[in-house]
Image (cartoon, rainbow, N blue to C red; front, side, top):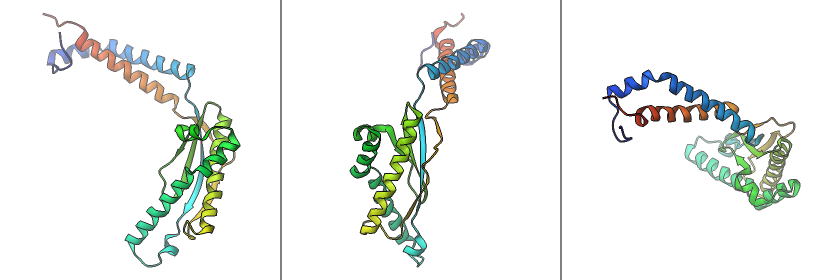
Length: 204
C-alpha cells in the first residue's frame, strides 16, 4: 500500500485517471455539503461604509520632496488608524449600537488597508440591519473625531475627510455562496484522490 511519503508512480497516476468518476462524484458531494453548510450555518452579513481621505500632498509639501511626502503620509495615516480604533470612537459606536467595545474590536469591525482615497469600514453581524448600523456609526464617529483632531492640530490641517457612503449600505454575506461550493468541492475532491492513491491496494 502507498503511503503519503511515497512518491506516486506512473501506475498510480493511471489508476487515478481511471477512477475519474469516483473523484468527480466526491467533488459533487463536497459542493452539495458546502451548499448545505451555507444555508444551515450562514456566514454573517457584511456592510461597507466609505470615507474619502485626501492628504493634499501638493499643499502639504509643495516642493518635490519624495522622502518628506512618504513620511508625511506614513505619519498621518498611522494617526488616523489609531483614531479609528481609539477608545473615544469605539465608545461612541458602542453607545449607539449597544455592542461592547471588546466585541467591536474582536473582529466585528474591519478596516481596509488605509491609503489615500477611499477607506473602507466593514462591519459583520448576523443581522444585516445591525451590520449596516455598525458600519455607518463607525464612519460617522471616526470622521467626527478625526476632524476634531485636525482642528486641535494633532492631525495635519491639510488632511480632509469626507463620508461618501454611510446610508443605504450594501449588505452582503461576508463569505459568498460560491466560496462554500468551491471549498466543499475541493475538500472532497482531495479526499477522493487520497482514497484512490493511498486507500486501495495495488494490483499485483
